[in-house]
Amino acid sequence: CDREGENIAFEVMDVCRGVKPTLRILRARFSALSHNDVTRALNALVAPNENESKAVDMRQELDLRLGASFTRFNTMLLQNRFRLPGANEDGRGAVVSYGPCQFPTLGFIVQRKWDQDAHVPERFWKIRLTHRPGAAADGSGGGGGGGRVRGG
Image 1: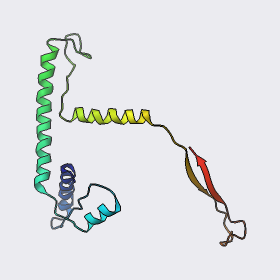
Image 2: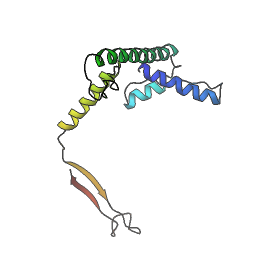
Image 3: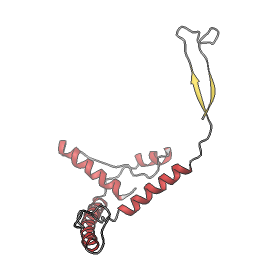
Image 4: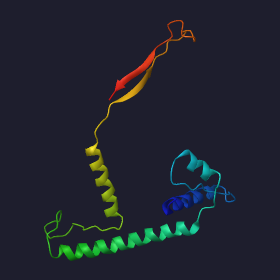
């Protein structure tokens, strides 16, 4: 499991305990959605880890402060030296944004777009089934039909 998931667990706990303060909350910790991993996690529930959640809160706070400070620094430094795209006549109005999460997030978006552009569709089978009410269950009388249809 990741720390972000732990932080989400504590946000949910706050809401639930706002309604019922004595509620006992346990968490299933898993990283894959396979039957074995989920079953194992459900059989070994644990209390959410407050320290991991607080670590996320601290990272979010640092990201915000660092991003705001560095954005202001970059913007003021560069708008006094260059005419930035989107700036008005006096050179103001454009912002040079910085955030520690922006570049990795942009990387995910670009990679996803490249994956979509490189996708080659494949033909596939789909099942089509029809049913007519009143048909014999043993198949002896015009019940319906079905079959595989080539798709794609």
